[in-house]
Image (tube, rainbow, N blue to C red; front, top):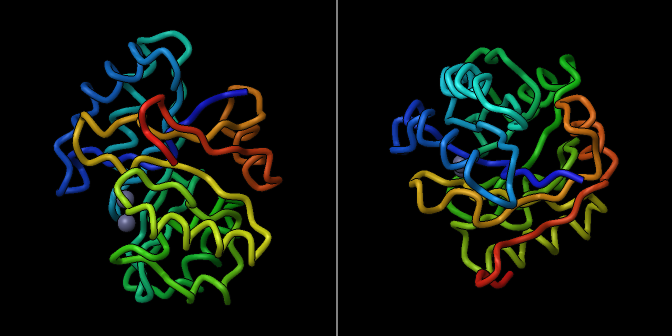
Length: 200
Ligand SMILES: [Zn+2]
Ligand SMILES: [Zn+2]
């Protein structure tokens, strides 16, 4: 089992002040979370830097990803190291992801920039049912959506500030490698979790 923060922004997002170096240092000293998916807004530049820095440490895992702004709202794609062509619709992005065997997660469906009920007509792998920056009510609606669609629920902080990192995480029953983790998410071998003191 591995605990992963599946939704993190670095300063390459433009609206986050988390540097790749700070992110890796925080991950290294965190006793619980040892893996992170980099999901910057519309770029994978941050992932490349984080991945390179992680190589100097033992036991840290970095999953490539991106939070893509589609016409309908934000969609997280995990397991890609290239960008789609913009502008694009949610369906076009999902086709792009499917061609690359990537995992598609709907982040914060009921927060601003979320897909809302548009998610119901899309072929996705998981719903982010616990977003640290969303309200409890928004996360509850996301949970309901996951149940209705019979999809796994995952957690991510959506951190844009260092003190938001790793407060919530996804427990994945997988070996510590990217392909095994992506497969486990697709199969629903996941559970959401949070640090003591943060009530889901
Ligand atoms: Zn977003
Ligand atoms: Zn985000």
